[in-house]
Image 1 (tube, rainbow, N blue to C red):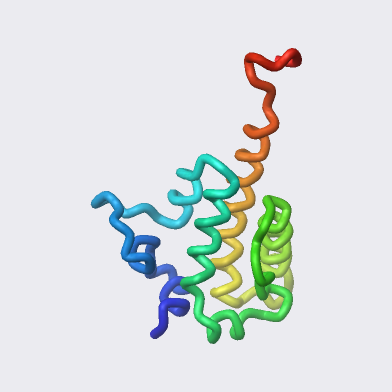
Image 2: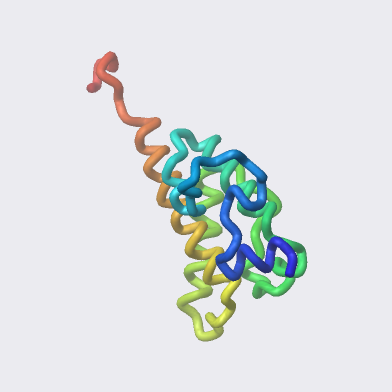
Length: 129
């Protein structure tokens, strides 16, 4: 079983694929997403997550659920999350890998929306605050 198979079955956690030194209470992917303070940091987590998915797992996804080559913006995340969730609501929604990706990318898109909102919020020194 390769790393991609493990992540799609929900067994691989962030510290296991990176060898990163994390506190004893290892974070889940969704907790890791929530802990990011900037869109750039969030996109790094997405990149790390995608690196854990093997080519055989990507090939097993239904064609509409295959990810783009890279995620650059919050819009990229929300567009892909929407595609995955839309597939999950369809008649042939029995692909476990697509379901797990939909869960992850829905969380990533929600966090990106929060971060984008925080980035555009007026500050106390702003004349519109």
